[in-house]
Length: 508
Image 1: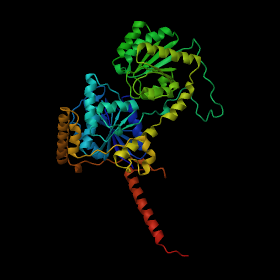
Image 2 (image 1 turned 120 degrees about the vertical axis):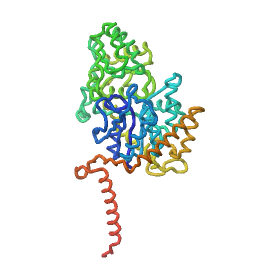
Image 3 (image 1 turned 90 degrees about the horizontal axis):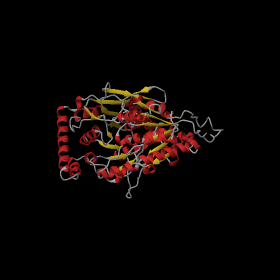
Image 4 (image 1 turned 180 degrees about the vertical axis):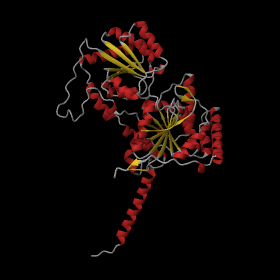
């Protein structure tokens, strides 16, 4: 069943990142599967209004004030009028928010539930429970997820973290990992399976003791990405291994500390800082190296290490969050998030490459078989079917319909009621004081919705035409509404023809 879906987040292109790539790839694959998908994000420099991307993906860049790390200023209610206008124009049925630190995501889910729409949220991050920032973030997450139909996490560790932070029923949280377009991350020496069908690849040639090994780091230069750990480890790694060099790409507040470390240790000829790189340039940087170093302090998934493995790099990463779930052990060298252990793990990786113990030339095809955005879209579609009531259950809680074969990919969860009194009951249980504040926000949001319905009626909002889709039967492009209407007429004609056929007398 096709759905009209709105993906909402502060994080989207042209800003590079895992959430941004996830939203784009998932939206594109859902469009390929017959759904209508739009994206709502904030305006970027030189990018406002409505834009169209590949495959007819429409992006609304809403003009809101950005305060920190491309996150808009939280106002709770000011986003509602323009959000409602977009939702009605595009006839949206499901609102899918991304990232627990995205203000637009939280506000969109609140407004969507007020408008009587189904809502899903994908959490891409891990947070603690002790520091003030985590406590406030977790309380905000509990507010939003108290009235949501389903939650998706990108790893099992992320699911455990989200369930604890938001006090959720684990049955309403599914795990759907990220993926990678393997064809966009091919190693330099890649040959297709057909090209080497009659000659299997031999063992890798070990690197000689005097051959240079390049270690690549591509990351946002923030504290949580382990940049302080990287700054402490680089001089020690280079001192122990004279034929090793670093390539570091990315931008952020820790870039100054990296530059100071390089100047202090006179490493300008062995450490290259590339600055920010576009996502389409990541592969060109990765294929220059042999090892990918990922010193993150917290990570729910880590798409970049999958991209690195697809490019044929041996991955050295910290054993934190959901990273141990991402790649098999023969592709990775794990380290504790400590300076000494990171240096030792990097040394072990260098030794294995020099001895030829790692078959990095096989990584690309293995990653290609493990991760697929088509699979991610299919599993997300099952979540949409569930919250829309497309699944039916028997008395044992099992699928009674055609979805039975797919039940292992999702969790069973009840569909949340839209009634205001039921919503207030869910919010009231969020805390002694927070519960009352949350209920007040929901009531004000509902009253604002009533005012908008009266003074800006739906009849005054034009309905946007859908992007023309290609009809595979004759190669011509047709409007999606026309194709849908044509399919309905075709079914009616076919049904009438069968009835007439049955009514004809038997000549024999």
